[in-house]
Image (cartoon, rainbow, N blue to C red; front, top):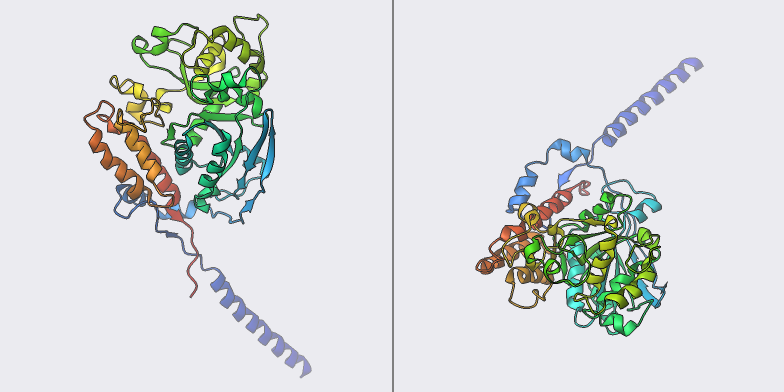
Length: 445
């Protein structure tokens, strides 16, 4: 009898266990819902939104991995030493917010892109607008190296701190004083435009930076900076810098007609957008017309200036042309759409790359962002300058830009609006495709 009771008790317990197993097991197997989240960047009636949404199949949703969410960390204010003095460094380091699994610290450090700019005088707003354009579309984190006169330092700090946290988490920045390691500082400072010669000393000052993109303050990114950064991978073993030609047509190019000094190639190069492998620059001896054995970058700058200072017109850009005239194997040239200037349209359209792909980087030299000489350039600058971070990109940026271009059709540059708008629209499409799909858990009942 006792044995029978034990068997019955065991059977009952086993039955209860099976019931609990099947009940909780079925509940746990229910998959989380996967939805297309409402997008704040593009309106429902946008053609891009409809086009992309039509491509989102169940397979597309299922294949997207779930991002890890980690708390944001902030680094304290630190002093960064440089040759000419201390630089105020304020850094915000964001956690990995992409859709891939978190990478190692070393991998994340390698993903940071470095961008340098030099600002003096009344260039504050123009510089902040350039920084804004770089942040609008770029994918990887950016470290900005801002070289500025002392009165501008606090204004930069104030301007950069006023942007939303979602934006400030995407970048770090350091502010440096204007310094020149060789020669007469006042003479360098007045070469061409105020402080423009500072770019020549970037390899000397930023000794801990491997690669760097330098841009003038009047530059606007119309596509991710990541795409320009990828040109570093195109360098061969001797190339250490990249620039675009000064002009596409030698007959109307400045250097080919008026230069009184050596210059690179047939039309020279424009230094308003300059990609550099600083490590290679620091370790190279450059050929020149003064010393047969070659000189390091820092040792070359001052004697080169002394020799040609009475023959140069465009200051530091002319010195760079002279350097790469004698070291042409060190320079990689990228197409004109990566440094698109009024010269490419004011004499008729002469940048085939921009006609086919659209402008990638807009360079508004000649002050065209602030006068009415080339309204097509001013329209783009005003649209980015006035765009409020966080607003719908299409409604608050692209549509106003498209509408204002109608007022420029009677100008040489305004007659080809597709050159200015094509890459912006393509970039927005890419941004939307990356943002529109989200994995969300079902709301609590």
